[in-house]
Image 1 (cartoon, rainbow, N blue to C red):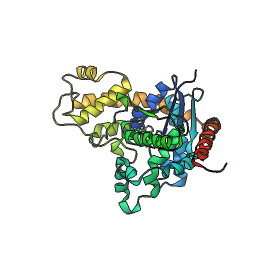
Image 2 (image 1 turned 180 degrees about the vertical axis):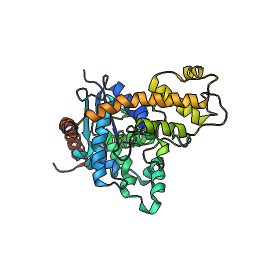
Image 3 (image 1 turned 180 degrees about the horizontal axis):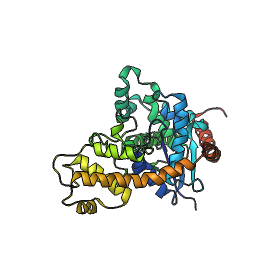
Image 4 (image 1 turned 30 degrees about the vertical axis):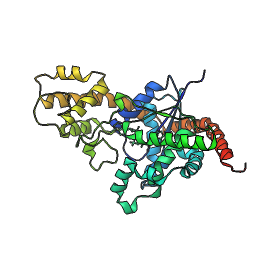
Length: 328
Ligand code: AMP
Ligand code: TRP
């Protein structure tokens, strides 16, 4: 029996951080046994905001290394670079013609990013970004899309477009579902627990990068904002502490309740010191695995992945073109 398919991707556009790992990649590693899994490095999404070409190239390979070092197994899952499969852009163009401008205008990620860029300089690509994402998902008959909560609006749009296309041209696309878990709830910024941890944050004190060394982790955790009071408690009245406890809990597989019990009568600084060690204990072996992966090896895996998905993408796009009346 064929396993149901999952598809997900991350942009090579900044330092990957523990939010990316805890919110997305950690789930993928668990899912790859049960699902036919495709994981993509979405470089075409990354260029919707300005990128330095050399950096983009370096980060694209680095994201693939992060997937592999986190435990994505190329024998079980398929990894590839989005721009290696030109069908993504072709399908996006076709989907553009059935999407409506107000549907894109209401995307919160677009509004946030456009505001950051300055409304006048936001690119048309940035506006169109969710359509490219829909095309990534729909090309492969994806059933589930494991993502962090912030992507739910994009998946909803993908479903709308797939339904609209099917209605107009006959059943072509599977209607995908988002897959989120409690873990994929947003990890918030260390410098501001009201905003999600983000690789494009202006301060490095916002995030713990997956490449941070021990000294940096200790420094950043020491500086992380905490709430007033001194008790280590897990609730919404202490959002900064709640976020730190979440990180501790997800990396150590100890529940927030147990963490509270462990730190009764202890100070914030005791908790923070322990949290830094939990993070370091995770990052050290991870970084060792990353360092062992050569660019050549990783490129080989990505080429192999592109070879595997190309026929799937070609078949789906052929079907789409035929349905809309393009001459074969
Ligand atoms: P991005 O960094 O926006 O390319 O996101 C890559 C993946 O990581 C997506 O599935 C996001 O939902 C997830 N993600 C990004 N930032 C966070 C965060 N702060 N907390 C949890 N998940 C996140
Ligand atoms: N937009 C996603 C993000 O920023 C990345 C992405 C692009 C993606 N294409 C996708 C995620 C397809 C899941 C499926 O996180």
